[in-house]
Length: 127
Image 1 (cartoon, helix red, strand yellow):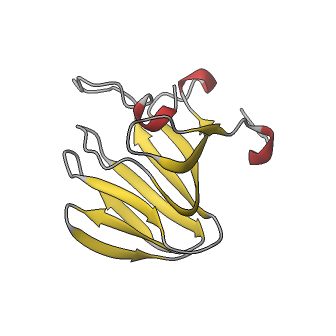
Image 2 (cartoon, rainbow, N blue to C red):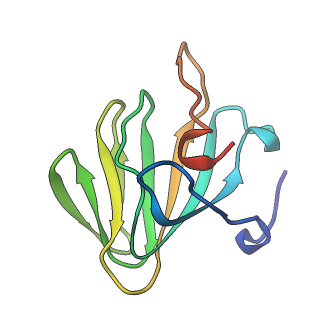
């Protein structure tokens, strides 16, 4: 079992091309012997954004703090605390902070299971 305050987990910059002002904390993942998924906390600074990308795995996202947009291809959806987002596999997407304070959200992704070909946990900087 792992029990830890999230601030004790290192926050690292997302260094993928197309990311600005974005940091990640890998809260739970393979290194914790989690068999099925990883939980990451993203913190996007005011005016910042995640890379615009797509991949073969899904995302489940829960917005904790701040305001922003998630792009579903070219369609914009507003984000605020309490909003839930499901990003299906192969869907182009990007998260943008439209506020002045941080945009914080939890993002869950599956581990490479059931014949998946690309490494999920490495997406957006979480190894």
